[in-house]
Image (tube, rainbow, N blue to C red; front, side, top):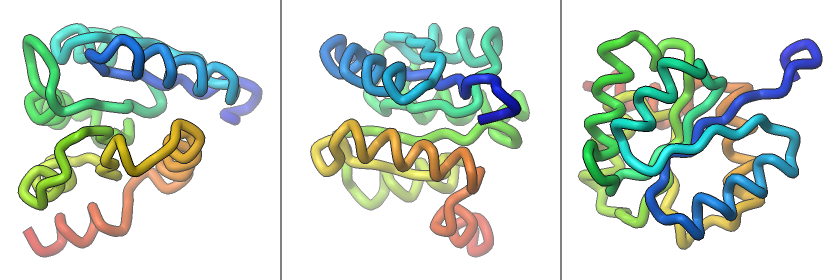
Length: 140
């Protein structure tokens, strides 16, 4: 990992139980973990901590995940920081919006174990952009 440096993951999630679960799973997998419980705090943490990857919920207090993605895009952070959306909302329009807005993956919470999420984040770190995301951008 990055020449001996741990990869840093920012988890933006308002569900305390899930936040704790993912924090523990990523910590045990060798990541430095930063957490935020609302979109605005997550955006501040992203700017301050410069994470290697961001795990982002959509339904968040203060500022939702789509707004966070938009701001990250405006700040140029999406160029270098892959964002993996982890949401309960699996509607096609939300998935499309998330990927077109710059997320590299869009995961439905109930469909993935924490171990799978860690593996997908590791793939996102190595790929930096999903094939689905690239296809959406090319057709948009």
